[in-house]
Amino acid sequence: MKIKIGKYDSAARVVPVTFTEGELIHERSVNACHADDGSYDAAATKDRVADVARGVAVKMGLGLLENPSPDIKDEEPAAGSAA
Image (cartoon, rainbow, N blue to C red; front, side, top):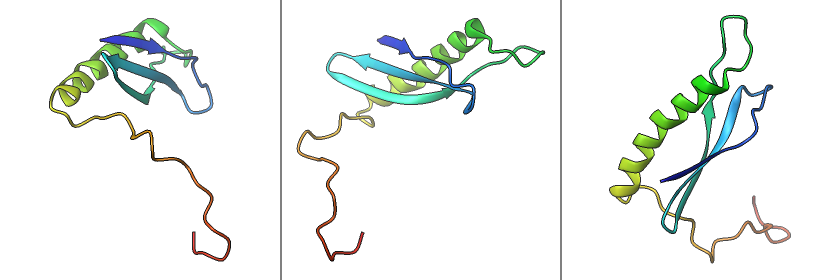
Protein backbone atom coordinates (compact mmCIF):
# COMPACT_ATOMS: atom_id res chain seq x y z
CA MET A 1 0.00 0.00 0.00
CA LYS A 2 1.26 3.46 -0.88
CA ILE A 3 0.72 6.10 1.79
CA LYS A 4 1.00 9.86 1.25
CA ILE A 5 0.89 12.11 4.32
CA GLY A 6 -0.05 15.71 3.60
CA LYS A 7 0.77 18.95 5.39
CA TYR A 8 -0.04 19.22 9.10
CA ASP A 9 -3.14 21.34 9.81
CA SER A 10 -2.41 23.08 13.11
CA ALA A 11 -5.96 24.41 13.48
CA ALA A 12 -7.58 20.98 13.13
CA ARG A 13 -4.54 19.13 14.56
CA VAL A 14 -4.71 16.52 11.76
CA VAL A 15 -2.81 15.43 8.66
CA PRO A 16 -4.57 14.52 5.42
CA VAL A 17 -3.58 11.04 4.26
CA THR A 18 -4.07 9.24 0.95
CA PHE A 19 -3.93 5.45 0.97
CA THR A 20 -3.53 3.81 -2.46
CA GLU A 21 -3.74 0.10 -3.22
CA GLY A 22 -3.75 -0.64 -6.94
CA GLU A 23 -6.58 1.42 -8.43
CA LEU A 24 -8.27 1.95 -5.06
CA ILE A 25 -7.71 5.33 -3.40
CA HIS A 26 -8.90 6.23 0.12
CA GLU A 27 -8.41 9.71 1.57
CA ARG A 28 -9.01 10.69 5.18
CA SER A 29 -7.69 12.88 7.97
CA VAL A 30 -5.68 11.30 10.76
CA ASN A 31 -5.23 12.89 14.17
CA ALA A 32 -1.70 14.18 14.57
CA CYS A 33 0.54 13.35 17.52
CA HIS A 34 2.06 16.05 19.70
CA ALA A 35 5.00 16.25 22.09
CA ASP A 36 4.58 17.06 25.76
CA ASP A 37 5.18 20.73 24.96
CA GLY A 38 2.31 20.69 22.43
CA SER A 39 4.48 20.79 19.31
CA TYR A 40 3.66 18.60 16.31
CA ASP A 41 5.49 15.26 16.44
CA ALA A 42 5.98 14.14 12.83
CA ALA A 43 7.65 10.82 13.72
CA ALA A 44 4.89 9.77 16.12
CA THR A 45 2.26 10.88 13.60
CA LYS A 46 3.90 8.72 10.94
CA ASP A 47 3.61 5.76 13.33
CA ARG A 48 -0.07 6.57 13.95
CA VAL A 49 -0.71 6.75 10.20
CA ALA A 50 0.89 3.31 9.85
CA ASP A 51 -1.55 1.97 12.46
CA VAL A 52 -4.49 3.51 10.59
CA ALA A 53 -3.15 2.05 7.33
CA ARG A 54 -3.42 -1.47 8.73
CA GLY A 55 -7.14 -0.94 9.34
CA VAL A 56 -7.60 0.67 5.93
CA ALA A 57 -5.91 -2.33 4.29
CA VAL A 58 -8.30 -4.74 6.00
CA LYS A 59 -11.32 -2.66 4.93
CA MET A 60 -10.01 -2.49 1.36
CA GLY A 61 -9.48 -6.27 1.35
CA LEU A 62 -13.06 -6.82 2.49
CA GLY A 63 -14.40 -4.47 -0.19
CA LEU A 64 -15.71 -1.98 2.35
CA LEU A 65 -13.85 0.96 0.80
CA GLU A 66 -14.46 1.82 -2.83
CA ASN A 67 -13.58 4.66 -5.17
CA PRO A 68 -16.51 6.99 -5.80
CA SER A 69 -18.37 6.28 -9.02
CA PRO A 70 -17.17 8.59 -11.82
CA ASP A 71 -20.78 9.42 -12.74
CA ILE A 72 -21.54 10.83 -9.28
CA LYS A 73 -20.80 14.54 -9.29
CA ASP A 74 -21.51 17.40 -6.97
CA GLU A 75 -24.43 19.08 -8.66
CA GLU A 76 -26.27 22.24 -7.81
CA PRO A 77 -29.93 21.58 -6.99
CA ALA A 78 -32.33 22.74 -9.67
CA ALA A 79 -33.89 26.15 -9.12
CA GLY A 80 -36.96 25.87 -6.92
CA SER A 81 -36.10 22.41 -5.62
CA ALA A 82 -35.42 21.60 -1.99
CA ALA A 83 -31.75 21.22 -1.12
